[in-house]
Image 1 (cartoon, protein in one colour):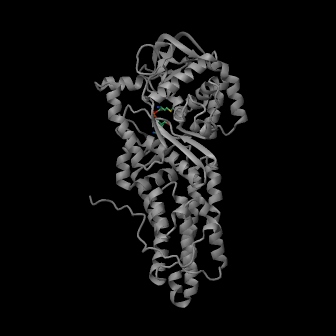
Image 2 (cartoon, rainbow, N blue to C red; image 1 turned 90 degrees about the vertical axis):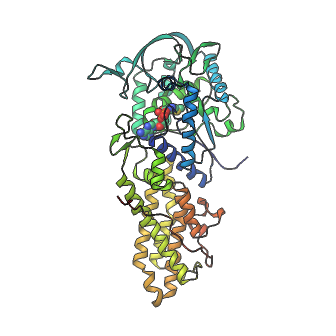
Length: 516
Ligand code: ME8
């Protein structure tokens, strides 16, 4: 077995009651960036994504379209799988909750929770939001101006009264609070943690975990008139994919507990309250971290089908390119905060950060190597204070990036890398190697070597965010496959003199507005 440290990371599993929207793609891209970063940093990474296919929302959407739930899935799930391809995700597995392995696993966790005395039968009478697939206490709901009762996320709730199994969530209040206290990094970012702590400290009600009025779900073991509440089955996906209920399975032993569940802020309660309690009840350990990212808005407005501003991620990728979109969202939005996007903002990042700052730096320096040095990496002469300072900055990127990624601060990792890109542009302009060509060719060679070395290191560190373009950048400095991980950063991987470089080609296209 690998000597590498394991790292297990997951996205939420999306409801395929519609096609994927940019919020889904955003979560997937961010999680992929973290997974790739950890892989390049020497971890044995397992990355899971998938689809959440049960529940009354799926059933109602299918009925409205005159379809069975399975027909609706056949229509939409391939779109989520296509999104995985289109955005170049590096997931190791794609779980669908209608799979047999998942039914087995969900029934097993139920049986373990029941055996632990945490499940009992009673009657549920209370509010339910189909859109959120969530039960809410009366005091969490309110009446809208037109008399509709709404849950805390603004979605309509309906009154439900039926026989139901309950999970003894109330019994876990103290243990949850102790877990939050002893593991301050469990819920990130901090605003989300405070929200959860005050919810739990306010007192926990037992949770209704089965329904009898529809049958699109996983039957309760021994009482198939009941189907499981969709969130019991949904959360279990994270262990199904590791082989649960076989806790001796290689994957389970190696990767559980998860290092990070990346999810949106609207579903933090399920992950940070219900999920650890279910796991403890079943005799398993809680995940190490739940990271609740923010919501994306289109020009500051919430995406909604009725407003007609839902952006198709496939359209965005086709218009600007996959890597440009990945870069834009991860650089522009502080991970954990809400973010907004617009055509102008995307074009600005593409042209300023990518085409100008990074693309031109590579193009200008490497085309001088091609023209003046027959495409061979020069032997650097004695290094000036400016050269040393530039190299030191480049060598320092990894530490800053790592520190940022310890807390999933993807934007800070990218800031650290692009700060070096900006400094390298300043260095290149100040050293003016084109002017040295005649006056001091040895000095020109040194400046070109330093710049190419910075391009090499930036190329390595840009791989998690822009896998294809960064690979193309590394091709330009002829980096061998074995020297593209973080182990090749810093002095260890310095660009060797006399390496022959290919003719430089542009890697980052400038966005040009199509003719009206
Ligand atoms: O919640 N911006 O599925 P889902 C950013 N099946 N993220 C967004 C977003 C937006 N505008 N809209 C949604 C579910 N998301 C459950 C999850 S996990 C065991 C079960 C995020 O399709 C959302 O926060 O409604 C969630 O993390 C993910 O997309 C899937 O949302």
